[in-house]
Image 1 (cartoon, rainbow, N blue to C red):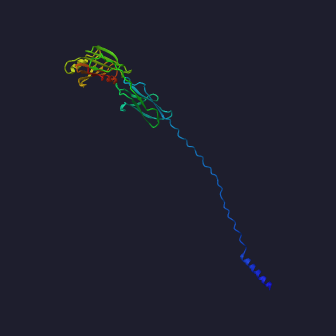
Image 2: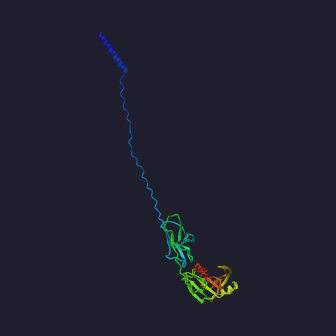
Image 3: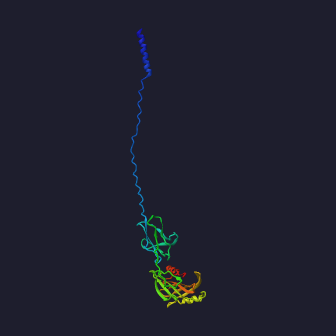
Length: 309
């Protein structure tokens, strides 16, 4: 009986084993490949050259130690351009009086080397305003300009001749000591004086003369003025170009335009005026060998005036 029970049990175990089959193996863990980091060489950067700094243009003003109306001054500056730089610049100059009012302007023109000079010269007035005058240089350029662009200066005072006992009473004339007296005639009743100035150049040289004599006790007429004018002539006789009647310091006067001959010839202006005492006076300014009456000579002639005794 026991044997019958064991056999069916074994058969059941065999059937159960056959139905289940072999056990599946445990899954193998997946292997993930992690890429190794590879170093990448960056291309070498080509260095960018820095710009070479352009040196500035150097400006220098050349100015005399002394400046006065007796000697016109050229405006001179130097603009130094570094080698290898094709720089260009336009320069001009302006002179201001102590009130900073424009007195004279100049264009500066290139000369030899790096020098620039004004075509005209600075001619200060006979009696300049007191205080600091200024020369200002204006530079137009695409490049940096280094250097002082202005020059302050004070005109030198002009010493004048002492006219006491030289001229008749009642008149005055301011003649600088640099003017040389070249002719003396007559006395305080009727006579004349002539002064000349040599400015070192024909364009600056000129003459100032003052003549006087008693006149008719009536208003000045053209014929009387002509007689007085001709009385001032010496060996050389000018050509009278024109004459005009004017009023001068409240007195009737005639202005004659003359042309003098010879190597020291040139234009002249002679003013014939009647004084309050009916004396007649001739004030002449003339050029000496040039085509224009120098400004300085003209201004000296314009200082002639009647004074109260």
